[in-house]
Image (cartoon, rainbow, N blue to C red; front, top):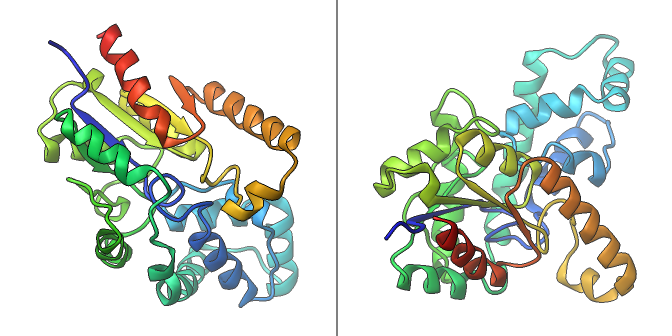
Length: 261
C-alpha cells in the first residue's frame, strides 16, 4: 500500500526553540554592532533562508539599506554581508545551546510516526557547524532525526529543493508523493512546493507567530485567533497543502494524505 514514508522537519520554530528566538537575537546584535537597529518584525520576514541570504534580504529592505548607506556613506556590498554573517555567527554560537529545547509535543509525535515506520529527516537555515551544537543538545533533551541536511553544502538553501532531495537519498525514500515537509516559515513552504512533496505549515511555536509560551497565554483569545488565521491564509497562498496549529495535528494530516495515496 502506498503511504507516507518520510517526514522532513524544520528545526528552529518547528521542532525546537519555541517562537524561533535564537536567530532573531543574533541578527539584532550583529546589526547593532554597526549601529543599525532592526526590529524583530523585520528580522522575521526572511526567516528560513540561509543566514547569508537572510542578511542580504535585510540589507535590501529600504529602511535598513538606507540606514546602512547613511552610516557608512556608501551602499552595502558582499564584503558587508560576510562581515555581518561573521558577527551573526559569533553571537549565535555564544548562545545557541540555550535554544535547543524541543517544542511541546514534538518528541511524542515523532515517536508515534516512527512506530508507523515513517523516517524523520530535517532541513534548516543553520549551517553544519551550528547543527554540531544543536543536534547533540536536542538529543540530550530527547529529540533526534534520522537525517539532517544543512544549506552550506549545496548550491542553494531554501527555497531551493536540494536539501529535501538529499534527505530523500539519506532516508532511501524514492517517491516525492510519499514525503511530507513540515515547517514554520514561508520559505519552508516554498521549499516543499519546489521539491514537489506534500507541504505542511505549522503555526504555534513558529517564527511568523513569534510568541513565547507565556506570551501566548497572555494575548487575548480573539487577537490570537486573528493572527493564527492570517498566518494560515498566507501559508496556503504560498502553496501549503495543509496548515496546522500544532504538531499534535500532524498524524491526522498524514492519515489524510495516505487516504489520497
